[in-house]
Length: 402
Image (cartoon, rainbow, N blue to C red; front, side, top):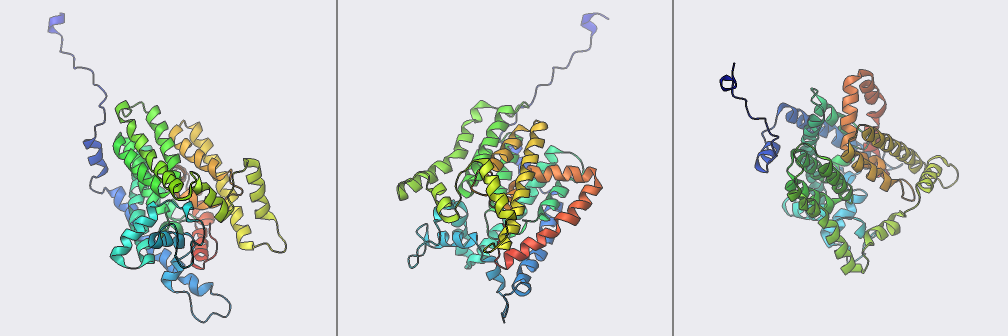
């Protein structure tokens, strides 16, 4: 056969550069079976969570109490009161009493959304619960989708959602706290980055940055994801969108400087209100260890017990970071590693179990492990999940639950 008789050779396929509209339409597609399964898990676990927290007013009532704590009052705890104060009065606090703590420690995203929703529903606690309910449901769908990108195995997304919802600190996804709102923005940004829709990734990261300082760790992780992408997603013309993601922290710092003359007033508020100072990692570990295991006069056993959970959560974060680095999952390792590092140089570990709710790589890795090893899933259900009830009861009773 001569060269003129040869079959025409098809042109080599070129990698398709992700566009803007097509990937975004995939993000907004109609719910799949996995999406519906994730959302169903969120919905069916809500009545039990509400019942457990509500029952705390009866089960753990103070000695001699004749009436239980009201249902809505059980959710009006700890940080939510500070968010409500900011939403109602601003950062100056109640003009009659002043702020209970330096409110600059809290970023403005959640309080101002709370204020907007309150205009519609008319009750502060209900407004907070509604925000978390909607955001939590969307976040579970996004977590399932991200898990599906990481692993095509059937059921990994649903399993990741289940493990998260049965985790000890899951009560904070239901409460009027920032976890649900931050998670939906962060997961949305991550999914957009995985699809190459960098303008939405930057904008959603900006939203997350307005909610929690963790948005800075997310931004660093997205920058690593952008720089290491080898599948056509990295387009240098999209790099400025990552800069947009970092603007809110600069805006908030400028607000603090104009208000207090201190660019770092957020960190100063942490030190004044919660005695959180930057120390070396060895000092942080030593201080937490002492608080977790020292006993004697004046020791509050409830806090002692929680400091042990803090130690365990940090250990999980360190192991997870090492696992991600070993698997060359650089961007996820950056997000988890920076989060753990920031928590590990505080004067003592504080609210780390709560922070695990935002570690979506943890729940995906655990889902993969428990799908491969049924014994691991059984152990999780038997040893870990029951503490979700304990933490919910503690929260509902107004006791420290991380």
